[in-house]
Image (cartoon, rainbow, N blue to C red):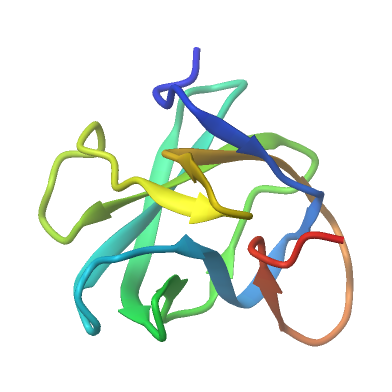
Length: 118
């Protein structure tokens, strides 16, 4: 069961990314965050460091996600419990998490931006 409640349905992401851009925020620039992932099948969670930069929630370290699984992505303030979600916007709609699938893709690390809606 997901620990998030209002999730954006994201496109499939590659397993290794240099940076994830989660969503837009009104938090102060340089606010330190944790960007979490939860594997839906097992409930296992993990996180990487994040920051607010240019009005967006971004990871600041490479992340390797478990392949072939569905995950939730969400953010908290650094040191907060994983149930103290930060609300962010994608396409001007408020969300607390992103549901997505991770695919195994070989190649160079990439930046993946959920705020770009095609």
